Length: 280
Image 1 (cartoon, helix red, strand yellow):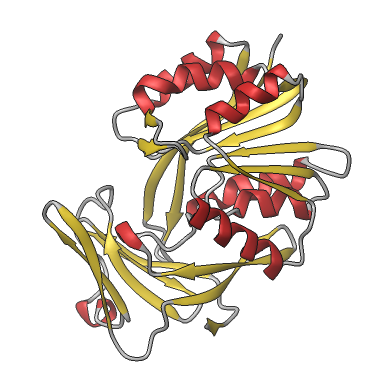
Image 2 (image 1 turned 180 degrees about the vertical axis):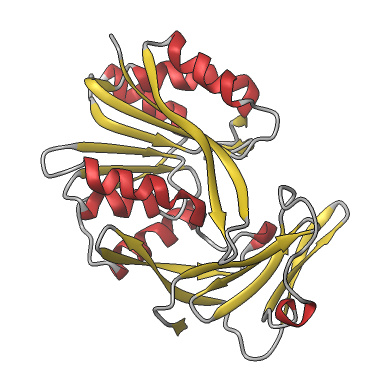
């Protein structure tokens, strides 16, 4: 397992691809939002030690160079601290982290504390959960994938974190059950996939299920609670997200794009978000 403390850097993007450095590991992978031309010379792109190649109607493959391992440790900033995540060359071009969500990790770290509760629906490998836990909050991390949940647990161990409740469950089913139990949270963060399957094969389609999910989540918030909604979907407009939140007594206080930038300040917009607080 490789390790370093150099952090994350977006080196370049364009022509439907992005070149990134995670600690000492440089990867080249597809990105449909990487519009326009590449800025940096090809010899920089040639330094990538792993290149993800897409295949029509099939799962793509990683073309690895040199002695790169399948997994390594990367440090990410959190306020004046850092936390560690285990990254890997996974299926569908993913590595186990979405660096553009740093804005939200810092928001959780700054706005949570001991005695507060965070619900991380669609928790993935746990970066948001770690941020909440490091702030001292009680965290409930929900994901339907057993293998992803295992990685999230390992990330918690890397950071010596114990104040996280791990839940392998369909996010909506868990939220509905929490509502019946009258459990409430100070912050709920969710990054629902465009398409997915629950633990028992439940089908999830974002455009069809988002409104119900927001409604259920809004009912789980304390009176001063906050919902952080994030999506990569190109079909869902930011204004639609804001209006869905308003429909269920959530007042938008911040919204826009989650982005990463190169050293030349070229910005790559990657996902839309809405931060909304209870107005009931």
